[in-house]
Each structure stands twice: as structure tokens, then as C-alpha cells.
Length: 293
Image (cartoon, rainbow, N blue to C red; front, top):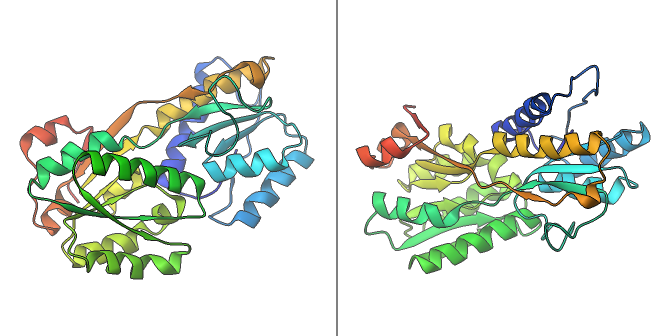
């Protein structure tokens, strides 16, 4: 199982894959063995891990993240691939429709539910007009997530101010630059880079009293006020069911991609208080989980 970064969201996806395989009736150690590989955010390491897995004659690559999928496709030499934790496999170049895709690839995907986030921001900040975000031009998944956010923000009559970042060292200055533009809130579209450097984003935003709304579950305990995340555990389970079909002899070419639509709403009372917001009871009751600190 190659993955690009190490995060709580990746761990949830991995847990979904492992437990999902068990739910299909396959037994680890008897029907299959798993090697978990994590590149810690380094593409050269990721490519090397995929090469090693292919050289070791892995029968199946279960990829977590868009980067891991793309690396595996480029280097797999036809080894079957089942992906998870991917926002848009079509933008990643592995298919044109759910049924028409590379013959050795299938998997489960799901993008940020950005439209559902807009009324949450409106409920907490009824007078808000300007939102800020960061995105990573070199990450296909980040560009796609940003485009979705821009469309949803425009439809909700928000002005969206964006700042591109290309390295972890860019993040703090870019966040500060955004906050200097009199934002009402940051609505952070997903990327591996901003997910890995989120504590720096939160530190800068909290100092400026700018609330953060985000889409990665791990940010809910790191400074975000409200997080609307795809359920990466469920997505992992969905991918595991597809992987089991491949392991039992089906060809990935005949298995359509599966769109996972389940999301979870996380709220953090301490993060809200830090930026002067009170979370209403109605929203708290709607949350899947509420954090106190």
C-alpha cells in the first residue's frame, strides 16, 4: 500500500482498506499479505517504493492519494492498481469516465463537498464577504479542489482570494499575506502540502483572528473551526471491495470507478472561541463529532 504523506486521513483510509478486505471474507496472512509504504511527502521516495514493490512482484498495488496513484500508474508495468483517497481520477489521467479507464486501474474517489460548506460559513459568519485559500499548482488534486471551491464560493456570492504555494517554506508567508487582505475566513481547499503544514496555517490565521474552514479531518484538532471531510475510512472500505474482486480474478478493466459520497462534519469549540465565534446548538447537533480542544 504506497501512500504519499503520513496523516490521520491517510491512516483512516488505510484502516478502511484493511478492515474492508476482512469484510469481504479474505483473511490476511492466508489469502494475502500487506506491506504499508509511506513516502513522508517525498516524491523520489514514493517512486522508489513503487519500483521496489513492482520488482518484488507485488500482485496488487493499493494506493492512497493522487500522487501514489500517478506514481504507480507510471511505474507499475501493468500490475493491477486499486486507488483510494483520490479527489478526481479523471484529472489524474487514469480514465475519462467511471467505466472507461486504464485497463489495470480501478478504485474509489470523492472530492470535497464544498457546496455544503458554504451555508455553514454563512451560518457562523452571516456578514462574511471575502474568503481566502491556498492551493498547490503542482498538485493535480489541489488544483481540482481549488476549482471546485472557487465555483462554490462564487455561487454563494463570496469573493475568493487565493495564494499559490509550492513548498512548505512558502506556507507561513502566504497565509500571512492572505490574512493581511482583511479576510472574513480561510476556506482551505485540499492538498497534501497544506495538509502536512496545516499547523503553520492555523498559527498565522489564529493570530489574525481569522477562522478556518477546511476539508481534511486531521485539521479538526489542529485549529480549524469547522471541517467537512470525506469519510476516508468509508472510501477505503469501498476500495477494498473492489480490490477483493481483483484478488478473486476479475480484471480491473471491467470494474468501474466508484464515487464515495459520505462526508463527516467536525466542529471544534476551542478553535471557534479563539477567533471569537460561538457555535450554535443547531450546528453542534448536526455534527458527527465535536472537539473541545
